[in-house]
Length: 308
Image (cartoon, rainbow, N blue to C red):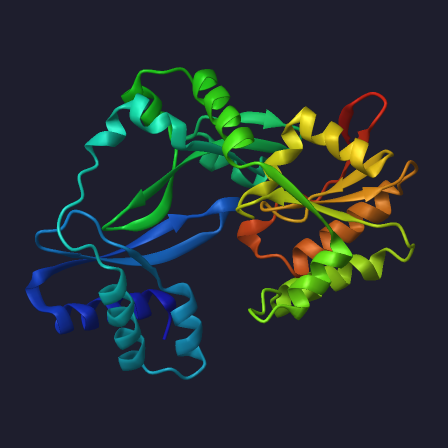
């Protein structure tokens, strides 16, 4: 069964199961790096918000032999756990003074998101773009984030630069950076009873070490939330502090949108490093989480980051 037919059959099955109490919609959702996903929303009467349940992964399970009945059952179960009971008042989001302290920044790839950036306030940073998101916590809908769009600037009556400066300051102070020695981090994650190191992450880190045979330590730079931590490469004071800690110049490898890897050294082989990053990005990193195929160099004496 083709994907379009699969989505239609899925919507019909859910409609049959829930009856007229719910409105069912299938929609395309553009994710980071131009990744297009397909989600289904189920909006019951008396509610004004609905969780989006993605169908792409379920379709792959169907192709592997999962029945339509099992797919629909899974969607219903996901919906029952995540559905919003009652109406959520979003009026607060119209007041910039009430939301501005919870707006933060992240880095995304510029070329891969050119179409998306037409709708967002953003700032160029080498081959990347700084964009903003709002983090919310709600008793009914839980935790999540909202990407800030140009329409929000109009709603709030503020300028793009004002928003970006506020978000950059919030991110620097409310999501402070942290760093780990890569070998210690791998050992800790591998030995953790919680199994924090997934198979994909283990393979990614193995690939990095496979390409780098010398004994120089490497460091992972992120934030305490370990979410969108690559943004730390835009802060000059953070880069300087890392240079002081390492004690020499270093190369910045864009591991993902969530973290970067710092490799000490004065004479990096740019071509070899770019090949390594491209290889890891294409084989081990989720398409939505790829940051860049380029590498960067931090000159400690000049206090300057440049793209290699």
